[in-house]
Structure formats: structure tokens, C-alpha cells
Length: 211
Image (cartoon, rainbow, N blue to C red; front, side, top):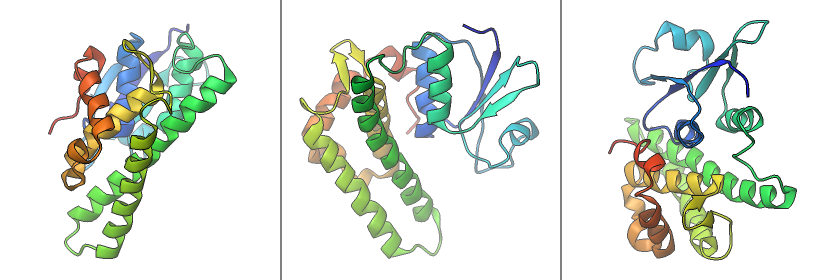
């Protein structure tokens, strides 16, 4: 384990940033947390490491040739896995592939939920775009509902989630905030049961996005 100083720039409502906040929390990795409001003027220290204006950004201080900034949540997760105990992905290649398949399905849906939300904010909304985003989101939820029981590896046991399980819970929480019309609790009973079963977890409570 290295002794680098970590600073995470995040938004409370970003599902991508929540993936990293959960990982830091459950693996007990010390890091400075810097909340950023992407809809306001960005602070200079954030712009200096994250000029593209997206979160999460993990600033790593300690390498001999100067600080390093990692941008994408998947890259950050892999960094944490490789340098803090190899506890995010399993050692078995086959198990890892299965979990990453399930994880990618959830994270891909984050993208469309963000696009849907941003389009809804526009004064001149494009109804065709909204319809397309909604179609992809609903198709993904239907696929997850079908695979939630005995299919994709979201849980190791009743007490332990895989990374895909954390990503699924993040997706369900985010969908309730950004697309309430999806009504996932009544339309997708298996996903609802999973969400309610996992919601009391302390690592999820501490990172739950505000309504």
C-alpha cells in the first residue's frame, strides 16, 4: 500500500462519483473529499486538475514526478484496486468478467440518466431525444430486472455486495431522483426488493445522494 495523499473531487448527486465514495468508505482508504457544484463557477483548484469539468476526479499527490489526476470512475476504481489491497475485483478472471459485465450495464445506464436529466433542464427540449434516452433506460432496467435473481453477480452473500451490486444500488437510487416517471419501485419488483434489502448498509447510507 502506498502513502500518497488522495483528494477526491465529487458531486453529491453524481452516480459516477458515488462509486468512488463508496469504495473509499468500504475499503477505509483515507482521502480528502472536495464537493464541487458543476452548475456554478468551478473552484480554481478543481479546474487545475479537472479542466474538462466532470467528476469524479482523483488527485494523487506523492509520485516523484508530481501530482497525477485520474478522471473516469472505472480508471479510479482500478487504481484503488491495484494499490489498496486488491479488494474491488475478484482474483478469478471468469468471476471478474461476470461482475464487470453487470457493472458496465449499470454504469452505461448512468450515462443515459444524466443525458435525460440535462435534456429536461433545457428550455427547448428535444422530445425525440428524451424518448430515445427513456427507451434505453427502460430497456436496461428490464434487462436488470430479468437478471437480478440468480443471473448477474450482484451479491456475494446477504452481507457482501460485489462492485456490480454497489453500482446497481447507485443506479436505483439515482433513477428515483432523476427520472421518477420511470417508477422503478412498482415496475421492477426484483430491483425494488434488492434496493430495500441493501439500503440499510452503512456504506450506502453515508454516500446516499440527497433528494
